[in-house]
Amino acid sequence: MRRIRKRNSMFYDEDGDLAHEFYEETIVTKNGQKRAKLRRVHKNLIPQGTVKLDPPRIHVDFPVILYEV
Image (spheres, rainbow, N blue to C red):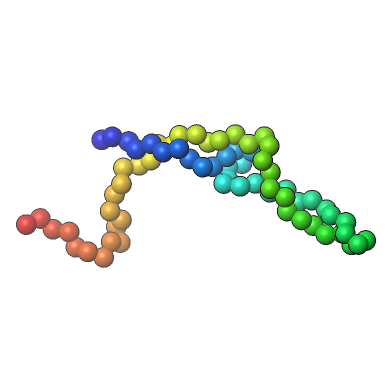
């Protein structure tokens, strides 16, 4: 059976974590008040690349009875 491959949109970061997007928390001082803000990380990310997918199958809980005529 032929395996399907697709290019994945996930990335690895420096720690080896896998995710679609990475954020880092930064402290911003505005009007004398400190606030935490999330900033998206774009550097040092490695794309996961091409991933092999399992062949498509009908789910066990599919609500239709399949039978042969």
